[in-house]
Length: 293
Image (cartoon, rainbow, N blue to C red):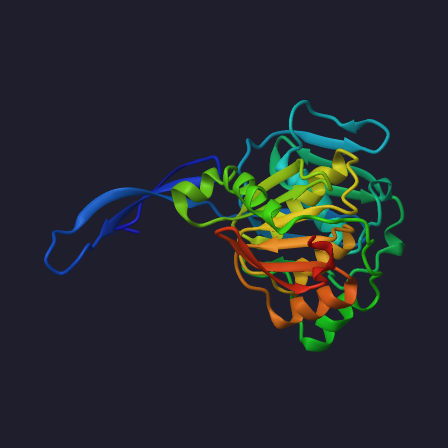
């Protein structure tokens, strides 16, 4: 650690001492760089399991809670820890609606722990049973398990039409929220839009699946219906992101980068319009292009 000195965290970032080697003919530069912060969030689902999620917190930690009858117990924006947790519960099939949650709580003396109480934990049908969820991937297991992820899901509704040209301003709106990425180059982003192209939620995280879960969970805790919506993503699209979209009823997925073969296969079966390479006023529709009018 003699070459790298960690400085305090600020909004999902930390300063790190680094040495830049511009070229063999130029002097080495010593400077401070902002890097994305990676932390552990422990999600303790009573009666189901304990999950360690590697994530990036971009808001201030503090006491937070949620009760279905009362809503959020803190003022202001939805706390990211609760948003990530709620989105994870939905997209991992631990809950079907917000009313399946009896309570969510982050304690002030343990801001890295979210306590979850479900109304009926015996109904949980998720394939996940505790363990570490790395920031690099939201899916673990072999190809057989991958197919099982979307085998029992219903097709999304057929309610949405969007002009291809509308995707560019949606991408720009998402990129305007990427303050951590602009300084570190190390985060992914997701933004959720209504059928009328109004931004409902936007989030950044080290993990692509975490950013997606944050926006889904934020809407869930605000009781905003995500069915028939559009999501934009800053990176590539793999299978687990399409599964998350289907579980939230999202009809269109637009990404800056490419989709994987399993993502295309799942999107086709689930009725999702999947668009990749959404950049410079262009896009490539891989599935269900009929929604693009």
